[in-house]
Length: 318
Image 1 (cartoon, rainbow, N blue to C red):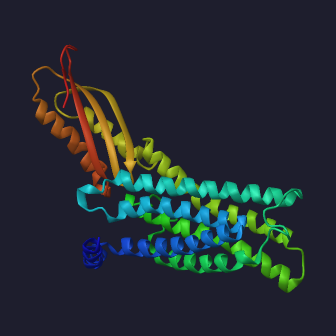
Image 2: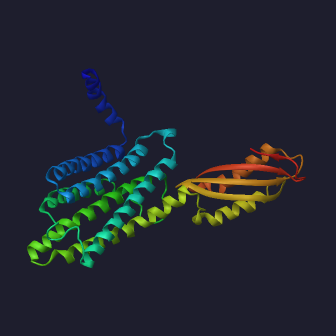
Image 3: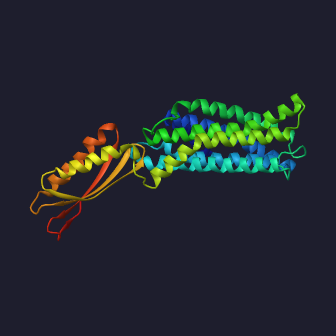
């Protein structure tokens, strides 16, 4: 047992130094959040404070989701396919959707005057310290991943999409946590009822999360489920025209394209060719059409070509 501990103490700094910069930053951010949440959960269980326990559990689930992003970031070379990073970003976006739903339900309960999660009786002062500390951690996390955020246009790569998801997580968790000290400050300093303030904070936090996260949900879902690349419709139409000009090609039977990740396009092409044509030459020319038209914009194209003889009897797959 002691030998394993000694080996871990020796290897841990080496593993840390081998992590990419974004990986080290994410480890730091997740570790601080998880440590704070474990302390909060322990205090909630020990004192029987349900609000503390639920708040900590929510954040711990978020940390577990972020480990998917971390797993994708620390992979190297061929071990990190773009789809892994897209899946991690999609998982984060789903968690943000869950957070939004939670805030909306909480705000609806407060506005409706029924059972409220944070009424005068249930709004314990014990939430102030962890919420304020979490806001500080989230501000640090958002600052670390701000450069990876992509607000306008398509993502250049799956890595950029993953980093953007981490930034949105820090932003969303910061707004979710900030509603507690802000509402309490309004109640204590301004002397007003904090219930209306809490309702407004819930709605505002939910609106901010939806506004920033819904493009990520749409983009990650489109990549995972093979949506057509809308931004490259003209380029793909030109590819189909150029395919017909390849010597020996009689017709384009099928031409389907979809994005599997930012910067990753798959094209599935079926061509009808004349009998006696050199298959290898036609396949190479077809792939060249996509690489010359779409690949020049920084997109990696995986083109699968299938040939069918004009006489309609032989199918020659790749």
